[in-house]
Figure: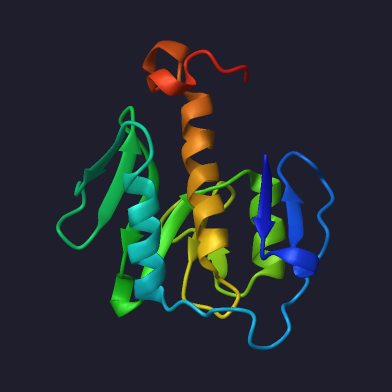
Length: 159
């Protein structure tokens, strides 16, 4: 899977499974739309809600929203200490590359720091990046499920 950050000549591809990542190329001023933490939360939740068999849940109280597929969490939306965050599962190597190159991506809050990241408001967090990261998180969870538990759309895909 490739994660595309940006568009056109300024795009950077981060290849999951590839040990080497090209450094993030920053966009010329004015081409990047900054998202604050609440915008990231709202947008990530809307992307997650559209995925096959995604279920919204509140297992930790009304303040924290999770989206699950086959009972497994792939996105957590919370505002610890008033700071809006979105937690997403990522490939461990991809996690390191993202944290090193994208402002606003940090180790996952209250999650395994090797496998989860948190998104916070940043000029480098765009809708395209959020969409790709939500999809990657979902696909990592689906790929870990036994075929019989996967959403129908994923049962016959080659791993």
